[in-house]
Amino acid sequence: MPNDLSYASDVAFTAAVKAIQARKGSRENYARMEEGEGWSTTISPALAAFIAEQNSIYLGTASVDGQPYIQHRGGPPGFLRVIDESTLAFVDFKGNRQYITQGNLTENPKVCIFLMDYAPSADQTVRARPGSSRAILAWCSP
Image (cartoon, rainbow, N blue to C red):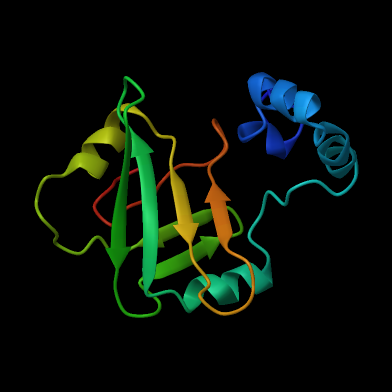
């Protein structure tokens, strides 16, 4: 994990977020979670099975200036694949040919893939930790 992150949850729980959590009374619970098991930083077999079933995802990127962009991506189940315990890949089907996501990823490797489980269980969010993960699209070369 990069030196500037103490816990995997620091990707989402920045100092500003933690200050608001403290002010609103939820910080203590999240601090216990961080000091305990915390957030998983690898793809478990259960998460891999969930990912294999997906036919729709939301992909969030940001420009070099931080302007967010969220795009729907879809395909048959299996279009989103687990390569190993920390790498996902997907087929980049031809879309509207604006290439905003691809352009953003060339300048800013931070990405969030949101997987919705429309069944009764909870949603799954996959976050890329700076310095340890990267988005992999079918067209990319390492």
